[in-house]
Image (cartoon, rainbow, N blue to C red; front, side):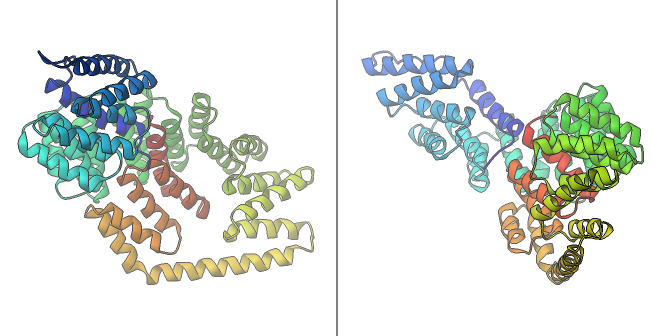
Length: 472
C-alpha cells in the first residue's frame, strides 16, 4: 500500500507538531536517581533523535533500536522507532506495533496516542486510525493538530464527519492550504461543484498567486471538461512557479481539448524539458502531432515514448498509424507497431481494425483473419457494454459506497464487476481515497488502454500523476 509522499509528509508533520507542542520533543534525560541503564538508553535516544532530525535514517534506526534494547519499557524509544521506520519508507507491521506499544506503555501521555493514530493512517488502516484519533480528540478537543489528523483521516474515508471537520480546520488554521484543497476535493467528489469551487475561490482570495491552489483548481476543472477555465488556472500555476511535468502535461491536455494545438505542443514540450523520463507527455505530444497532421514528427515523439515504455499499447497503436501515413518506406515499421499494439491489448477492437485496414491496403492475405478478430472483439465489447448496463445497479452501489465514505467496500464491489473503463475509473477513485496512489494510477492507465481517446480519463490521470510522483 503506497501513500503519496506529500500526503505522508503532511500526516507526519501534524503528528510531530503535536509532539513538539506537547513538549515531548525536549531532549530526553534520565530522571534523578535513575539506574545506569536508563542513562544509557537516554543517551542513545538523544543520538538517535539527532540523526532523525538530520534525516540520517540508518544511524537513527540503529541508535533508537539500541535504546529499545537497553530499556524495553521506554515509550518514547518505541515511538521514535516507529517514526524512523515510517520516515525511511518502512511503513509496515513493525512500525505499527512499535507505535501501539508506545501508546500502551505510557497511556497518560497523549503524544503517543496521537502518533499511533497517525501511524495507522499512514498504513491505510483508516477506520482504526479514526477511532484512535477520536479518542485523542475527546481528551483535547481544541488541539489543532489532532483536529487536522482526524479531518485528514475522515476525508480519506469520505465519511459524513469529514466536511464539518475540514471546515473547522480551515476556520481555526486559515493558513492551512492542504485543508482547503482537501475540502474542495471532497465537495467535488460529492458532485458539489459549486461548493468546491467556492472553497477554492476563497482560498485564492486569501492567498493570491498561490501556485498549488491554482494547480489543484485547474486539474479539477480539466476533469470536469471545463477547458477554458482549466487553462486559466493551470497557466496561473505555471506563472506562479509550478513547472512540474505533471502540471505542464495537464495544461497541454487542456489546450489541446480547447483546439489550441500550438500552445498544447509548447506545454507538452515544456513538460518533457522538465522531465525527459515523463512518459505521458511524450505520448501526448506524439498523439497531438498526428492530430495536427505532422506524422513524421509524431513518429519521432512516439519512438521516444516507446523507448521509455515499450509495453504501452496506445503508444504502439498511435505510432503504427503515424508510420502508415508516411507511405511505403515505413510500411514494415508500421506493421510491426500495429501488431505489437494488438499483442499488448488483444481485446481492443480499434487496434484490430487499424491492423486489418493496413493489411487490406497492402493486399496481405492475413487481412481477412484480422477483420474476423476485429468483428469478434467488437462484439465482445458490445456484449461487455450490455452486461455493464445490466449491472448498473451494482456499479451505482459501489459509487454510493464511495460517496458514503466506505472506500474499502467500494473497491471490493468495483473489483467484482467485469473490467471496463468506467469500472476502472471507480477502482482508481477508491484507491486514491485510501491513499494508494500508485494503484490508482495503474487502474487509470489500464482504463486509458481500453479507451485511449477518453479525455476524462486523461484528465483524471493528470491528478494521479501528481499524487503518485509527489509533485505539483
